[in-house]
Length: 147
Image (tube, rainbow, N blue to C red; front, side, top):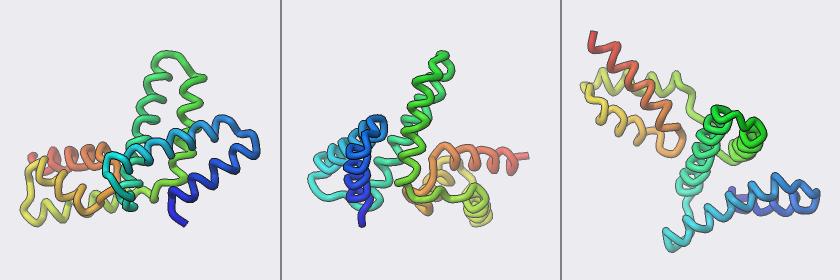
């Protein structure tokens, strides 16, 4: 069963059970995937689906922070629910330790520029890591090596 089939099946279940919040969230996710299919003019690969889901998760994370900063705990809670729902469809994140090992290996291999390290690391973990996590690790490693 593909992720899209799971999403549609879960939408039907949410509608039958009367879970309006879950149904609205699933509809938004399905709509984003459909929009990406239209942009691409064809079926989505697993990587495309993963990228869309990660982008949506990132939007939710940012919204949670902004809503909490603005004192809107109710809206932050809703975004957190949607983020939790989205995380159930995403492939598991690569552990930070594995990213660090890869970055260390690239540095040992002679790559020392930030942009090159980011590009190579992201290439190795395509659609399985958050770019912000990789950026933080690469910056720490570069700062540690420059001293």
